[in-house]
Length: 180
Image (cartoon, rainbow, N blue to C red; front, top):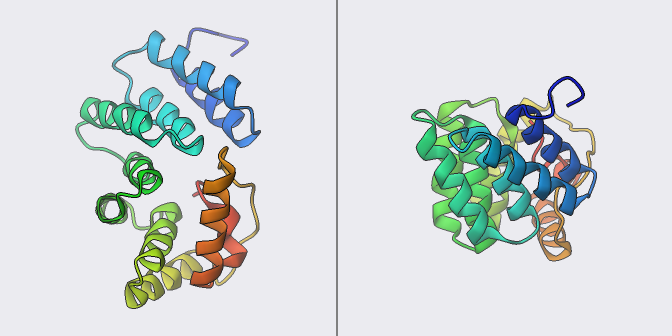
């Protein structure tokens, strides 16, 4: 940012960092600036969509993530995870599962898609699928995972994610939400 404050990717990453620091206004501002600086930049849209989703604004986040995916002909596992998170926040669980599964197919090693598959299958009572996703999360983490900060800006979403992680047997990785 010090070298070039008008670099869209730097603004996008600043927004992501501010999200994890629980600075919603600063995160949203950096994301808006990134999108304004590069309206055709998929990453700016996706990072900003995650900030909105983390704040419980899934519908607005969904619009941005869909715009980002349209701009990127081959969306990454991260982009598909962001899409799934927006659907998850909205309670569109079957659509969320579809996005997370596409993310897994794109890059199997990206843990957040497996984690959210586990959480969503647990929520839907799909125990076999939840167990398979949990096993993959643990395998990718070497059987363990270090606790990490919670990405959620909305207290209800934070509680929901942690409660589902506990039900799914992933208490140790509940905080991994959003980290690969």
